Image (cartoon, rainbow, N blue to C red; front, side):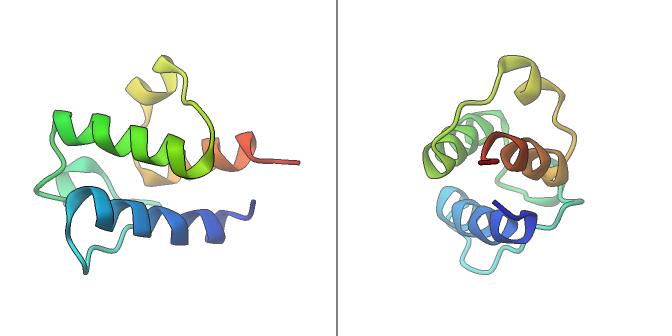
Amino acid sequence: MEKEAILKKLNEVFREVFDIDDVVVTRATVADDIEEWDSLEHINLISAVESTFKMKFKMKEVSTMKNVGEMIDIIAERTKL
C-alpha cells in the first residue's frame, strides 16, 4: 500500500478514535499535537490502526514510534505484497 493512501486512512482512524472531525495528521504529527492523545487513547488508537490495516504492531514498535511517519513506514512495510 502506498504511503499517501495509508496517511489518508490514518486520518480517518484518528478522527474516529479522537472524535475530532477536523483533525489532520501528517508524518510529523506526535501525541503532543493532539490534546486528547493520552496513554489510554494511544492504546485505542493502536488497536484501531491494527484493525483497519489487518496487522499487529510489535510491542517494541509501539513503544519506540516517535511520530505518525514512523507508523506509516511500519504499515507500508507490513502491507507490501
